[in-house]
Image 1: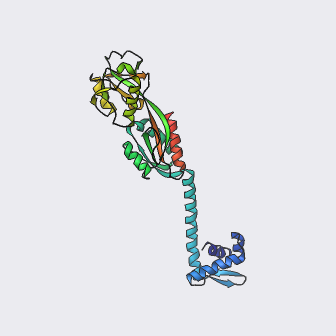
Image 2: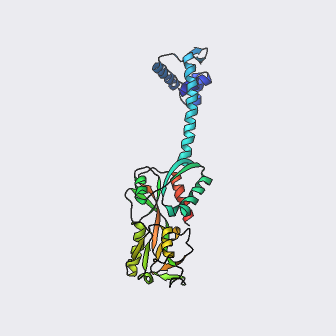
Image 3: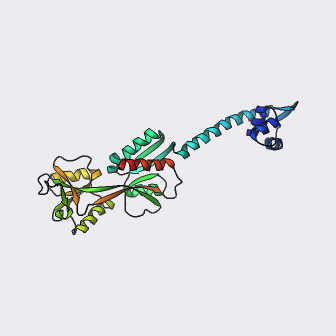
Length: 287
């Protein structure tokens, strides 16, 4: 149909061949094949040139529309391949939202406004499954080791800080050794999983296992229990966006408990420039 369009537009087979870079014979064969497929004559000779029949003119009009659509599709595909457009499904956990995800999304909107970022808060297991099974393009995770079918990109080491009641015996210190908290009552601030493991592993290195008297599994609630004098807690730096007035926060050393925040993408997914740009934006936010 595009060959027919060129013949009708130029008025001759020879001129169409020159425009398309074909031989006149190849152009004639293409038109003949189209006539055979449609079962009607599409061109008639007029002197040294040709003109379309009614059927030929009709198909030429459709060829014009198809040509415009193909050009639009090529331009849209080029934008997608270059990362200028697209849709990213992102799974994240709460404490990564304000410090990492929000500035990364803002940067994507500013530099690549054609890319739509769809955000969903998800538990680690759900987020990992969504990426692995193709329901999401990227997930923010706290993990150690390799993910099955998921490529993990380190973004940030997020250290835990000691949260103490204001009147605590160590509150006047600039930092505390983790071992100094061995005999304290502890307020839990994590769900079982990689984050809690990071705390327990550090305590094991310091030679003790914490004695949890309250399980809050929430950083804000944990601070409230600490402020009430029920115990001490460890909270990651990103989890201390808002601080309870009844607590003090001190750095921890010997050792420093750390959770590693990573971006997870499906290993078998085709390369997507928009995904890589979002990871770059997350790294910028982490820095």
